[in-house]
Image 1 (cartoon, rainbow, N blue to C red):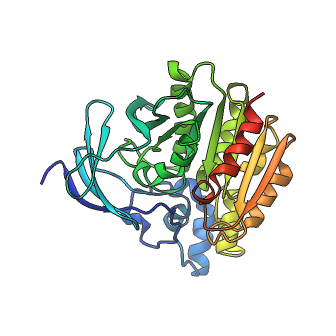
Image 2 (image 1 turned 30 degrees about the vertical axis):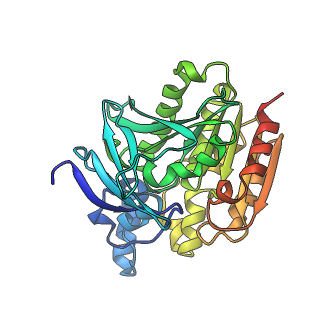
Image 3 (image 1 turned 90 degrees about the vertical axis):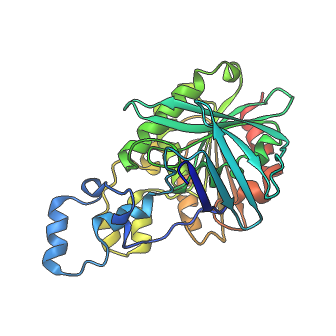
Length: 331
């Protein structure tokens, strides 16, 4: 049926895979991943198991929602629910399998805003039901899924007093455009600009919370826009594109991947409070990358080493993370 997506399988945990069929997806950044000389080198040696497109899939695996969809069913590990979207901001309304409207202890406002390329980007402003927020969080999610699977990373912090803006990069969810590494850094800056323009953000402490790929991006954006933010949280992030590629494909990974920007290059230029979170049990991005970012960061900084899965910090350690964030932003 036009306008309805019958089933979308979404999981709270971000999944990072190496998919050799990424050319079937919205991945068009081959020119940014590998220089032409390296492509020729690969062809000459005949040892290519991963094309440039495949290496790009390490970093970007968007779940795109067709623009005409206004109803969809979300299946998670825990339950199944239906979501309907309406209006210019694609306001979401949630229903259970019986058709009853679901109530949460927070409110969600669907919004759409324009990026610098003219594409419309979609997001949700998630706020406490009644009390004034203690601060505003710009969330930068990981390389996979979309807002529908990523927003739950921020709801534990909203339940503890923050308001959080979760949104999708170009080519993810309802956001228009193509997902490329060069584009998503522009998107992140555009999301920050939009969020800072809102009246409900004025006068509140402002921080960026990035997870996984978003944690890598967050260091870059924070360094670029230091005067506009008060603190930075980086969870489960890799230190550079080359580092994470080399961890997957020794020798070739570091050679093949073009860096462009990196958390390691940027974090040294950020001089406000930083909290780095990483799990020793992270099977997606090894903890050594979190430690590397922490070592490079300037004071004042905190390092919170946890257990559990990749970017599951707010799911299992929400009280501790909230306390650490408040210590950074509240006088």
